[in-house]
Image 1 (cartoon, rainbow, N blue to C red):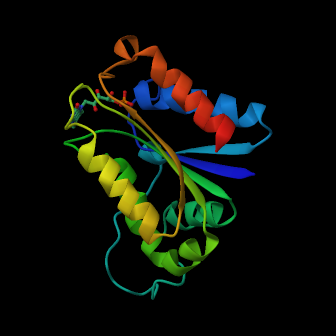
Image 2 (image 1 turned 45 degrees about the vertical axis):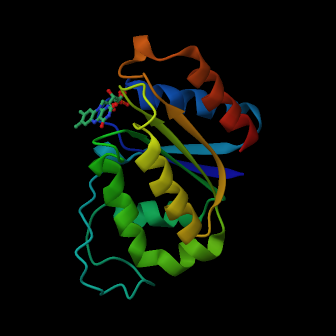
Length: 176
Ligand SMILES: Cc1cc2nc3c(=O)[nH]c(=O)nc-3n(C[C@H](O)[C@H](O)[C@H](O)COP(=O)(O)O)c2cc1C
């Protein structure tokens, strides 16, 4: 299966990208083909809301967005990876999700498998509640099959991240 991973952390060696590596290990060991796209370092501008795409065509913007959308449409699974920023995803990641608008129907029709990997500093019952709900709603709206979410609390930097989340990310790769 072709899997696209969209990463939205500015820290190449931070917690969310560390868990992405575990995911990739599990997925490639199982025979999947994985492409990790560093959204945080890509050239992607925010959706202009211009409606030129009609939700069914290329975006007018000349950046990396259209190519990334093509890669998503050529895959069978999509994984989102982000640090928690103010109880939601990073704006680096949100920017590409808003650009899904240009191919909203095509993406919905793919019935992609989907997963979330997210990390946060805090370790309480509130920290993951909004981001988990947000992605559940996005997955439902886009007709994605939710294959799992790694919600790594108490993981503000790599050295403090509990081992259980490495295992969860690896298993998610194995079982997606
Ligand atoms: C702008 C910003 C907002 C943040 N907001 C939260 C938050 O709401 N809750 C939390 O627990 N941690 C928050 N953090 C901490 C990060 O989620 C945490 O350090 C995460 O592990 C960083 O992931 P990364 O290493 O993959 O970049 C925030 C960090 C930044 C820079």
